[in-house]
Length: 103
Image 1 (cartoon, rainbow, N blue to C red):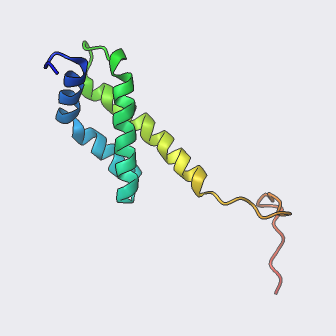
Image 2 (tube, rainbow, N blue to C red):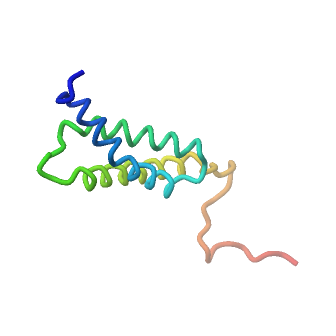
């Protein structure tokens, strides 16, 4: 692989700015396994988007924006995954509709 190949350029830029990816992952994930998954997902999405990167712009800003968007989506999926379904017959009562506790 030549140093002028898109992959070589991407790898060099990613290595130079990798702290951005780790900072975002550390902000959005508490567990090491989740952080590793998020770093992997961010890296994948950066590679997919790299052909559209405008070299006239700051790579770190472009990278941060993608990392942030991926992290937000990752957090939403995790939150959705962690939600428990209501038991059969349960209703979604609003705060004014919750019955008072019995003594």
